[in-house]
Amino acid sequence: MSKKAIPFMLAAGLVLGSAPAVTFADPPAPNEQADHAFDNKVIKKISAERLYERVDLLSKQPREAGTQGEYEAVQYIKSEFESYGYETEVQPFTFQAWDGGTSSISVNGSDFAGDVHTFNGSVNGTVEAPLEYVGLAYAEDVPDTVSGKTALIERGEISFYEKIQNVIDKGAVGVIMFNREGTEGNDFGSTYEGQDIPAVAIDRESGLSLVNQLQSEEVTAEVSVQDAGPIDQTSYNVIATMKPHKNKDTGQIVTVGAHHDSVAGGPGANDDASGVSGVLELAKIMAKTPTDTELRFMTFGAEEKGLLGSYHYVSTLSDNEIDRISAHFQMDMIGSRDSGDLIMFTPDGEKNMVTDLGASAGARVAEVVEYGQLGRSDHVPFYMEGIPAALFIHAPLEPWYHSPQDTLDKISKEKLKETTEIVGAAVYRIARPDTPALENARVAPGPVHYEFDDRPL
Image (cartoon, rainbow, N blue to C red; front, top):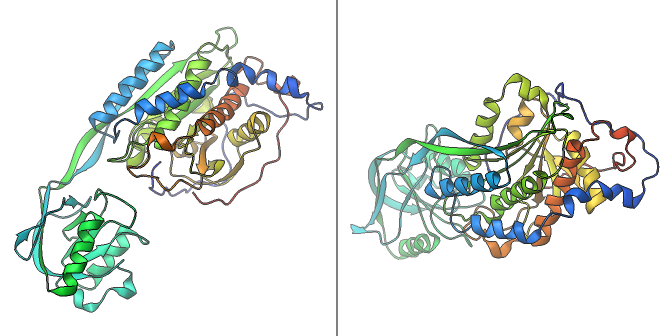
């Protein structure tokens, strides 16, 4: 899941397309066996072992957008969709990535022993100046004495932008930042427009060593960043399409998605190999299930770079396709044993057809799922086009989020299976051949009561 915040300028309330809409009537008192009869065409076939095995395979290496790891994941996903009988498209797109070039540090004339990582956006240049430790670099804690010096900063609590701006405001000429407690490595950090200062990252152990050295002597540091800058890279979406029975086609489309890329250096077992596995599992089952609805199962690239893949995909849709998409279901981070309960997030914090169907499916399959407000995943571009969309995710997030510790051993088979069952039951409620006339179906109970949950991610 992307950390990037998305501004929303649309008014609350979703615009439904011209496709036949699923409607809810007040049905007779539901019969429990009947309620589950149509769900069982999907949920009985969902395999926790298959879900887990796919997460295992996908999380054996990082899948950062634009890397060989992502490309190999894309080829695997494509081959799986094709093996189920789907028309499958790999959709490449170009995005701008950051090449950190070469960065280095010397301390009192000696080469720095640790690994050095260039901040995304850092300017090129070399500065040699006294080093001063400024802690977490809160504005009120940065001393005037940092002027003309390189600031040694600890990561955490406030944003990279704030930390760097606070030391720039006091006249710092360079930045060395070390990692926060409990987090390994040095692959982090961004500078922003106007922050024209060489900035590099080091691991926590190396940073604390410099802090200790400063307690006993003055330290002069040379920080050098060379050949850093933006480069064009290629990422991919994978789209699998199943047409409805030709004699029962309602004209509507339902899309189900996840993102296949991970953060740099992270195996991304939960984020989002778990969601990809859920998409593949539902595609496998639905391939042999009659529908009156076109189904599109898809995995997006470069979600971690700012939802780039899903924005690209939606930009390729015709007006007719947008009008015909009745719902988009997004599965992101659905399997961590250490996260909270399942929730459905919409970008505007309003209920829509997807959350109605998800809550109803949850009540039949497991328990009622609440809803909340959040962007930050690939449901956003669909929402921006007026398509009912929601993100299915567990929250609060696990401590391993966006870290090298997001590994298979943290995955819960039960959470994987339950979320896939809920999404699958909701999707099938739209796609099964006796929709959209659900008001006449005793096996489809009416909407359930579900509350807004102001739960943090």
